[in-house]
Length: 224
Length: 250
Ligand code: HEM
Ligand code: FES
Image 1 (cartoon, chains in turn cyan, green):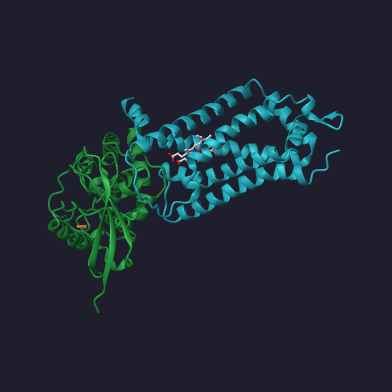
Image 2 (cartoon, protein in one colour):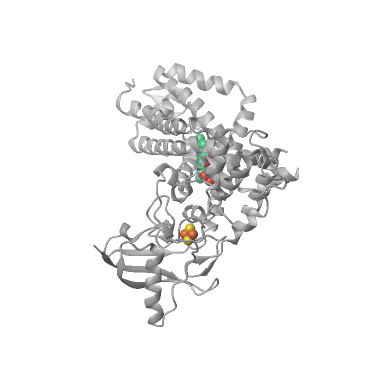
């Protein structure tokens, strides 16, 4: 018990929980991404998927609660570590010239903050939207969640903000994926270089595929 | 042919631990390109002494890159711009005539400035005292084949043992974290059979002391490995992370 408490109080323990929650969030993101792609199959497919998830309540509440908890834990610990780390160097260098840190690494706290803001906006925007109301109307017909999404992405600034957030996720994962491996001690002379490459591709792919939806709606979708 | 240079130094001057420091500019003339960085500072200090100014305090001992005493952040990098080079082994030929060079001490809460460029790194010693040793009696050198050590592990342990404890990893880390130093010690002992026995306990105790001393946490920026004069790899940090999980679950 004492050791466990010490683990949670330690710098490494906290960082490893950031890594574990980060890994769970990656799992969630990939699942979410797969679901979103149903939009390319049309209104029926996407709405049916949304209804299926909704029909799985109340069990779904448990999953959602766990997800919210994971998010909060990830955010609280990273914010704590950010200030903890700043405190370790109370007097800044007059001249500091970092070497090979990549941009995604340097941006972690900022892409993270952007993501936190995005999640709130995104929930209000789609999850808690009125999916039978005026926002879902395409022509005179309500197209449910599909209609809400399409109408939202027809607005340019809306799509623009969404794509910006997806770039943030891409950068976050580019550093995050290889970083969680290192934090949990999964380092190997042969596989670590490969993991770093996968990390970049994962970030690029997630950003590109999520962004393809607003781009599709804006430029290609033939909405009746 | 002898080549001499003229430089402007912007040096951090600080009277003692509690004083407020500031940058001062000094002119360094007739600097031989073959001098080491510390020899250049010696020349400047001689001039300052003649002018009645306190010489710049800096740490050094071996001046051949093996003791770990020297070190300053030169133009934004611990030990200066050359990779795998301690400050004492950095030569002035790597600078240009008329350059302005900024020189600062290691900056970390856990490394208080003693004076000018000299910092107190005894936090490292206190971390070592918590487990940077083995407590079994190993006796005299055993016969070669009695205790088998894989070639890979002996090489990795040797690589980690190359650490000279200079503190550049802390100085270069954006979080002033000491993970590369501690990870190096944990690897160099834990990869060998005599040290493996206490590996988990060692990780838990040394990490606790490292945190208590006020070093930052690791955010996997890998700056430490980039500035380490002895090329320690961050795989040592991963090994510490593993040992730390195992130790905490015990
Ligand atoms: C879409 C959701 C998110 C995913 C998939 C995700 C994933 C990750 C992963 C895998 C890591 C690496 C963990 C490690 O270094 O061991 C990480 C680190 C980090 N995350 Fe997130 N994250 C997400 C959301 C957020 C949010 C909302 C914040 C807001 C504050 C945030 C802030 C950070 C920070 C600052 C780090 C670096 C922590 C450090 O190195 O000390 N993340 N994230
Ligand atoms: S003085 Fe010994 S390493 Fe530089």
